[in-house]
Image 1 (spheres, rainbow, N blue to C red):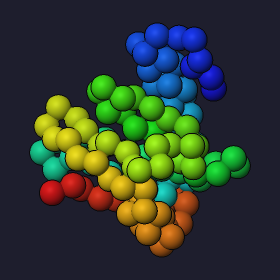
Image 2 (cartoon, rainbow, N blue to C red; image 1 turned 90 degrees about the vertical axis):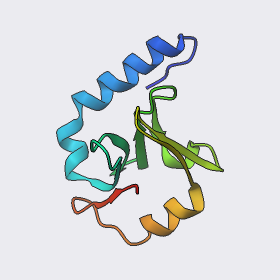
Image 3 (cartoon, rainbow, N blue to C red; image 1 turned 45 degrees about the horizontal axis):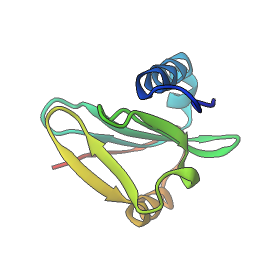
Length: 110
């Protein structure tokens, strides 16, 4: 999906709609999930697709999705209304080495 030439709000709406439309398939191939400790807000989903590892980051100011290898090389912000942290790509890489599609590693950030 391309969001080129769209406003941030339009791009975010397209990303969220695409994610929601394919949620059942994503859940079956989910490998990693991060949630906030206060209310269980989704911070990050990573799943295996035919194209490679994909991610969905619903951060209010970021709302992004795509191939993980195309994400910011330094890492991803994980945020909701209750918290904000940054997770380095090398940390994600170490976690992802140990996962299997359909049985995701679920992390609650403390």
